[in-house]
Image (tube, rainbow, N blue to C red):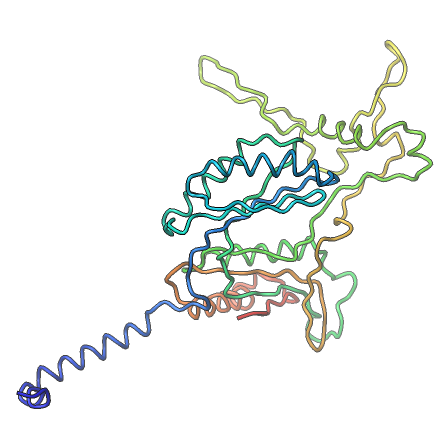
Length: 345
């Protein structure tokens, strides 16, 4: 019996099978994962170490070489490549091709463990391990300020500072991170703040105080380490010194030295030395982020979202834009002059 004859003879079975397969196909198309880029396993991580002001030879000898020797002891590592320049060490660690996607995170954990064992030449030098080369962002949102309705420009007294713009963008980032399917939300274009201790050259030449000594004075005053613990009959209590500096004004109360002898001795504070302590943005800035269209160009912060494996990129992007609209119109938790525009969708 031919296929066509069997289809005519068993028509109810054929119609039922075709209907079920059609429904199955429709459901699969509507629920199948969708992403912009194919999922693949990146078997390379970068270990970056910054040592400002150090010559290339010292960086190679004291940072790059010890780290390379440590990575060579990992069985799953195939090749270790490095580039060393003045003040910067960059090492690429390639895993074996036989390492499965399920095992790759374990390899990078071993890399981090080796990094923690290597002693750095100075305190404060921390190698950064980046194993997220495969992450791609599915939507980029620019957060910026625009004139209020009825106004053609932003008034000077209403302009947001870069710090205020950062806080607003962080609120949006935290809300979007809670959406189903979102793996990670990040901010870009944030300008870091810094505290500057300034004075004129004439005053500085009379102080007999070097920048290194000033740095040690601040470190000695800004106590953030635990002071230990006390064991009593009713339990154990931690001791925390109350010396942490929480405001710029408090830095002026740092004791730079003593004047006089014996009972007549009195402390000399930084405020007494003619030093000006201010909070400002880092200068020069490492990056500048702005959003512009045909009408305006304003400082901006970019919020970027990446999605979990097996999810639908269209559903997540639509949900993100719907959540932004809800924050603006329903909850009104965002200022009316703040605009959130998709830059890449």
